Image 1 (cartoon, rainbow, N blue to C red):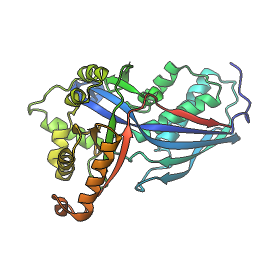
Image 2 (spheres, rainbow, N blue to C red; image 1 turned 30 degrees about the horizontal axis):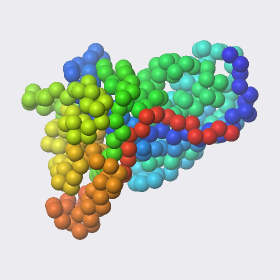
Image 3 (cartoon, helix red, strand yellow; image 1 turned 180 degrees about the vertical axis):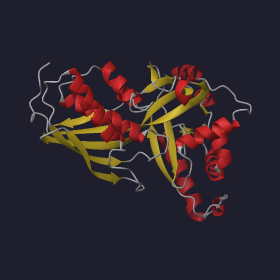
Image 4 (spheres, rainbow, N blue to C red; image 1 turned 30 degrees about the vertical axis):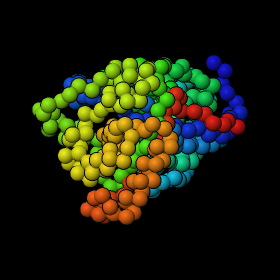
Length: 333
């Protein structure tokens, strides 16, 4: 494969979408301490935007130059713990193994504008990792196939491969064995992100394990996919579900309160995405999303309908719709 000119690509701009788990079920245990899950994942129109700038250097490296937050500022690591850096290191290792003679000594800087809630169950960090792999693959002349890129992504996290193509996909095993659904409906959502929360993903799994002796109703991604093919929003809503909801709501009554208020304000259903704390409401259209958004803001500011019992509880909201793509390259120069 021909080596790309070191300066032929200097700057790339890319965006990675957020995702919703329209279904999430736990089927059992897998070797290595993992849970076997089945989930229908859907990309939505909330995006993190990343700008990569490259120049020749003595050795390959990538640093996060700046992070801007469209909403609430959060603690996002910029060191080796960030999935962007982990993705770059993994890519460099794999490209070195595949083509040792290829010139790889570049230094890259990344500017990240985050709009997807941090640690909110929408896969923001995973999408950023997938975007990094896509960008580096572009810079190196698409040295890896889509399959190879997906295999690499799976090493970084169970839902990272999903963001390579995005759209509507069913994930099984750890959520990383993917099947694309092509006949999905176009749906509108109001997405609600609480600013106060205290359960990590491992804590949510532990809570589920503690509670799993209670009755558990099967949540089928296959049924959801079939309903989405019909385009009937009411039927689609009936197939949504999340196995974590009972355990999370029992331990976080403030989140249960928000879900209750959203259910009262309209839409077809309110659900938790991933391990939370982000909630989403399936709505008839963008107009209804914005109407519920306005009512929720009014309730919060006036302290009515139970909000006065939670004076420290604040939420951010976004109106969004389904998308059919994952990571998107916006510009190359």
